[in-house]
Length: 154
Image (cartoon, rainbow, N blue to C red; front, side, top):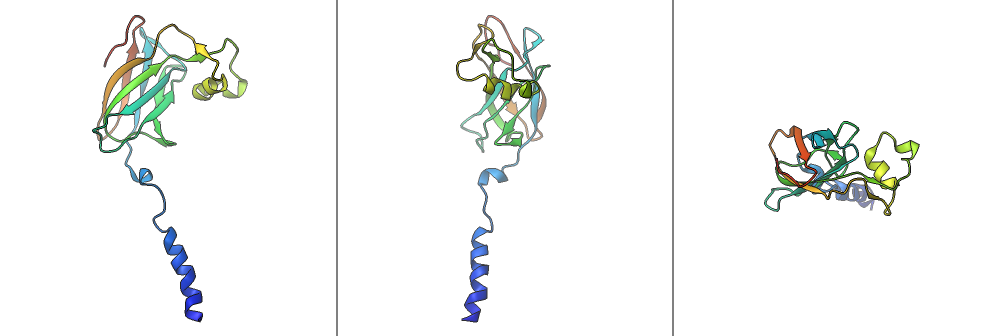
């Protein structure tokens, strides 16, 4: 009986060894850059990376561009993406005509969320689509320039 009492806790703790998701084990590489519209920074624009189906790992990522149009892509609260091919979507900042809440002045992504579902696009343009390939060491100087009249590819 004593033997069972000290083996039971070991057995139960053994069940938790190795817990965690496989996504936590995917090696990510840094992905960052700038978005501009006709050469001018697109502050607050949403930058989304959608993985190609042929990629070894599916790691979609998103960020909102800062005041200078810079972004740093994150996958599930981790910085970076798995290497591979991606479609990149750049969507202009949303606005409701009211000022951004003071608490979110330095966080364009949270500011756009705070504006709610009734927000309207700041510009008349639709989202623009680009192609990107992320190498084994990552990409930290990506540049996407949205043209006023049409989308372009890098």
